[in-house]
Length: 264
Length: 342
Image (cartoon, rainbow over all chains, first blue to last red):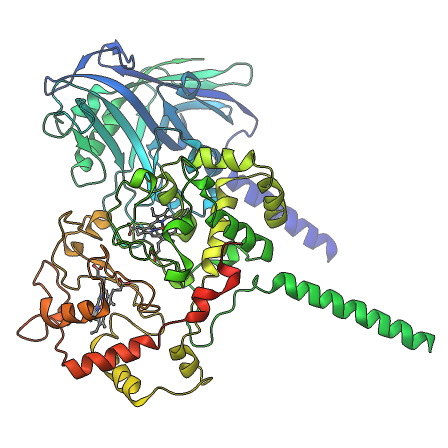
């Protein structure tokens, strides 16, 4: 009787295990590089001058965004989901180390990568004790990525100067785009969470192996934030925060991400 | 004989131990008042203890939480004013820059589901981030507040007593503040003792006022919290700032000019009234409902039941209503030493 039970448990156990880890569970390093650019120029904070689709010149002083819920898919169609608790990253142009998201993933050939730009609604409503690392509202200095008055994270923040922007209270021609909104706690409201899926087959699949660090190099183009499914003019919308218009900018966000190459 | 002595001794020690435990725990226990519903706050996620409550109270009264160390939560939430900013229509903080709203009472928050006049904060544990980082309130960053607490001579030990570790985090700081705020319970007004069958009954005037209240006010200011926790427009003319209330949070046009229905407990201590503190007396409030309700966007249907919007009230009815409202004042709450700055 005992033996049968042990056997049953063993069978059950292996059965469960199989479901959870479809992939070779020996992991290897994979990094995803978020290389911020402005069209055919490198993004240079404050000094670089760029022109958007509405033909307005502008400079960028703040560019920050959340990447979360990273998922990889192998060439034979198996998914690897980065564990929830370690799947939140903040890319901040002023912090070079933050441009590279370091992961340890099962060894495999990956042909597709997907993630959320922003923070999923579940984390937006979680107990404060679960909000650690980049989700800790105390982790931001000047450029907070959290709205206290309307509990929720700011997903993407782009600020800068432009001669097309009207003069603000401090005498500067400044534009501020703070894009957030996860859909609301109990009453529904705008949802600016956008997911991005990147096909790695055209510019090189990621063959992750233990003896090397594979790097997937993405380009993130701020110009595309102004143009894509809708064209954004700084002159007509110098400040976009929590409001209906922000959805137009959110819709442009997925178009900002492009796979450039992979280094194995 | 010896055996007896021993037993007595053991008993005494036990008794003493039990007592000291009780002293330590005297305000560490969340007790649901007999006439109240179950609380909304997730007590399981933040067990209230004597040490946690004391830490929260210390933080609440500590100006270290503001940029220039001059303003504490207690500056705007004054106990003698039922934790509102007595005499201020809209609260000012650092450098006297004006906020745009009247400070709400810290009272029976364990039963609230959303916070602020527009309900923009959905969890009490997240609320303190707003005043701390607001430019018109405390103008500080959360990271900096934590650093000041970490380098203080007293706080690390207090966090250890409260949460078992000297580590000072966002979560423990917010949870300590919540422990204090959750324990700010007002449930000892005359109304409460009558409802619980403990004290002398309403006078005839109060009783008639209670009847008028139930008929004309009670569906929004629902007993026993005296709020149904919903968002409604009670017909105030939009002010100079055109505060749109709940709309700013939901972006739903049907929420324009709606504000959280406030409790009517402790009105004797909380003047001025309404989200922007525009009405200085209860007479002015009753005059508003009787005469001045405006047909603004989304005026509540309950205030639209007669030809003229508002609530018809005779002078005699007003006096009775006021008599009833006075039974909601809770002197014990505003003088309770355990809630005061120590």
